[in-house]
Image 1: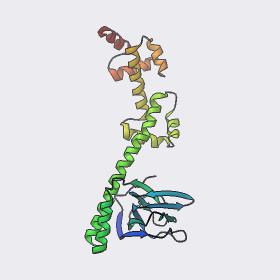
Image 2: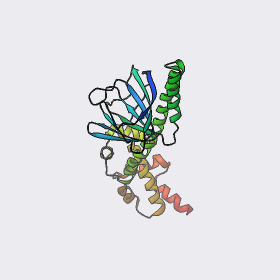
Image 3: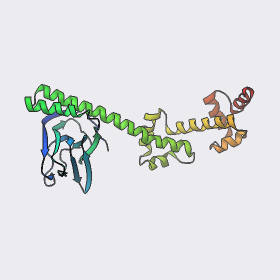
Image 4: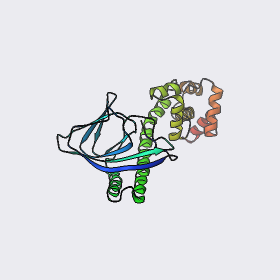
Length: 262
């Protein structure tokens, strides 16, 4: 699950502060959370429980806490106090995300974002909800958005690469079946695939089949009809048409020219 910061929404900072926990639990089980929040864990371990599910949070992790959500936080104080930054805010004119549950969505393992949270918290402590504090808050939102986009894009590349592997390796497997294997709808898979590879899954598969055909022509004496059948081109005239479209030469002429030089 991911979170999107809407450019159309307006964000109003309420409070920004440091929390130090020496107790074991804090609960929003009986009353809903009143504000949206981003919590940055400076040190320690927190376990969030909602609807029977658990989210484990460690130093450097950031969690989004939605307004109206119900949950319980358990603090591991066995090794000392648990400390975090918390920035509470409200949203008008747009939604941050479509979930009512806490979402752990970024691990700041290099401590890059820690300074942005610290600036907002210290400014709020010294100047209250001033223009400077609000500008630092918006800088934090922008930085969070950029960091999440980069992380999501990287993860998306790896995830969709599995789809590309299936497209290139199994010519009988439909695009819809591949999408299901990746737990995506066909339309979502096609959209995400094109954003990574710059072409549709069908176009990608065709390119890979034609490239494989060229390899067969280069390295084997297989008849062209057998190569076409091997790669799932059961209409030989269509195979010729697609091959020539990609290489500006027919399969037969390509093989003949290749043999002339090698």
